[in-house]
Length: 112
Image 1: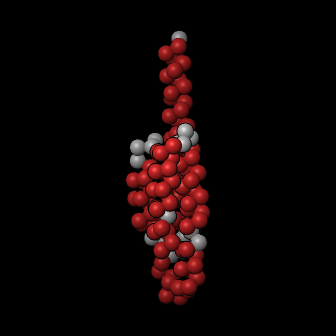
Image 2: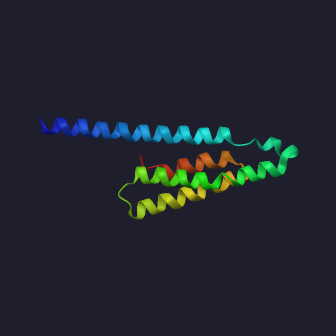
Image 3: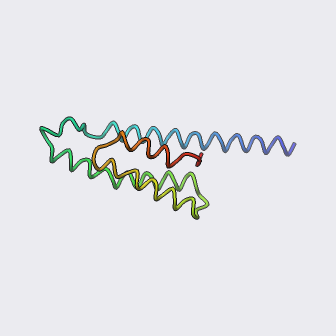
């Protein structure tokens, strides 16, 4: 009876992590869709650059939330996750979502 309960608890934990990762991916895709298009730079270059630069703070906040949820125990793994996720936000300041997604994928590999 105890082994059965352990399997149920482990399955529940795995499902919870999958839901968290799915929510993270959905949020990242939503952020990318909301980003201004680089093709607009000719018309409204200053506005686009300003909008792109403003993406860093929400990105870093999002990264901290993801790392905190995936590594609640803290320590060195959490510090590394936070550092990696912060570095991934730099391409967003240049409206380079194409570089952002592989970066967060690499940063989160092995955490889930």
